[in-house]
Image (tube, rainbow, N blue to C red; front, side, top):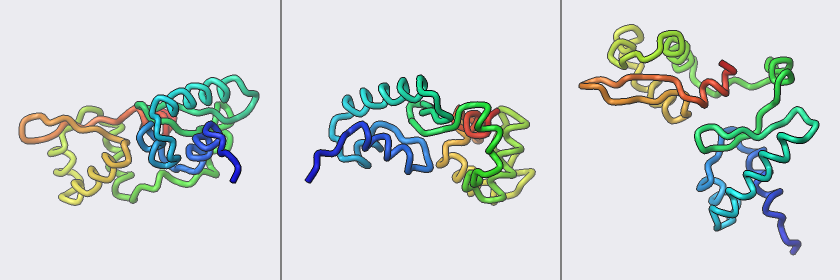
Length: 152
């Protein structure tokens, strides 16, 4: 059996994943047992794609990596992209949060009802929002991933 090129394997994992991947996730996906080796490969790939005359780049978002399009290509073809794989309700809540920064979860629940908790869980799992405990409620804010993903 041929020796697998580790850099190409990490590149393939990033290409196939719909989500940004961290070093530990790449260890699991590729079988490369050295997190240091994966970090080294990621740095090389980010530099290589940044220097290539291509529409693709590899972004680091909050310690995780993903393929993305460079501008102006991202804007030109964004209509072809599949949605963020969020439920309609979660998308509505996310839109409201993005227009009203630093909201308390309790105020969102008053507006959208008790199903908000499900939407908040979905948005937190997909890393579009983060929460910070404030008294009996939580302060909600969008993440860097949200800004990158929705080009805000």
